[in-house]
Length: 71
Image 1 (cartoon, one colour):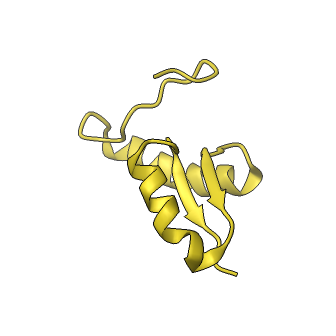
Image 2: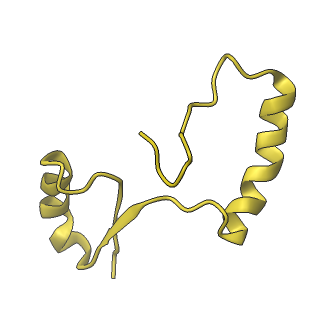
Image 3: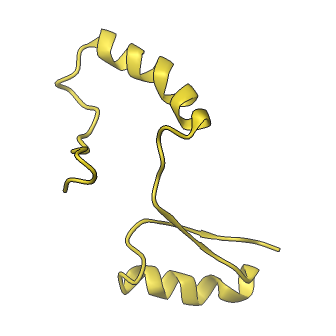
């Protein structure tokens, strides 16, 4: 999968401890600055929408993180 010239890869065994330490130091600030954006879907309606949202997730209607806003 490639999005906007970025190829996501897991942070795993091939990385050396220095690379993992650098990632941990940079990731939080990048996320707060909005430099890292994660696809997500917000379903409004609280607990009443939860069963339908879960079914849609299993049906692959949503392909990213799904949040059910509790209001």
